[in-house]
Image (tube, rainbow, N blue to C red; front, top):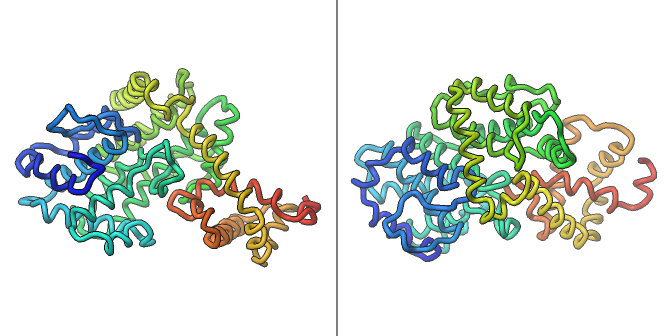
Length: 393
């Protein structure tokens, strides 16, 4: 089975028939997915295989792990399910998630079989750190949020309704918890400060207070009653606070408080921290993503350089589009002499995204997750605009 060639899904479903897949549950599979690195966004192994001699790339491992988790979820949830219905349900599920019709709609005209269509959909969901700008952003920062697909698919099968609200709410909760975790450090270095500001100004969901006094009270964790949801939230937060040094007291207190809010035992909390540290220690040398004091630092350093080049290459057209937007210029001018309100900041952000839509090279800003890069664009605007604009600063 080669996940890089057409027909791999049918081959997977032949290798693992209904009876063998029905023996698994998502609760059983989750520890294996975490051990394999899938939960951490870097698959170093696969959870289900018949042929251990095949060497897979990281992207191929991630494809197999995602599809295996989705299929196990289907057979665990649907009584008397079959392969055709499983593929049909997955396609329907992803079509709901494709709210902007930007990722999967072209597939309809290029494929003849549903299996082939699903293969292309799964391919679009996978990101690799080595070519982060050559692929669409479907999740925040890394493949670590891919497990949202699995939980949202389970929600879709159980409740038989559009899963976008559930998926968005879970992503919002995770994003905001990560922000709070980054803000929990007692002593923040330069990168920590940058990351806090980055998250505070560019997350897609902005319901949480971004002050240092922000607490769990603004995040509705009571909505998550399933143990698997809780463990996933805890594991992702443990990954967010991970670094190559000892976790400081502020981070330890935060993780323990999160465990209490999720009504998980101290044993779960200790296991979550131990698992991420063990995984990184074992695989750090072989995964470039972990050869930094924090994975998010790697993202920030890599993307800031790339975005800088893109902006400077499109400087003339960007200036023209910005200056022709009357409302945007007024707000930018006022921002030089006063603080803009939340509504005005949101308007600036939206109008800048509209400007980016007109410049193909800057399409990264309008892709899902691309708003995370918006502060990098805003940082360059004063340098791009005419000198007369900067005289008011």
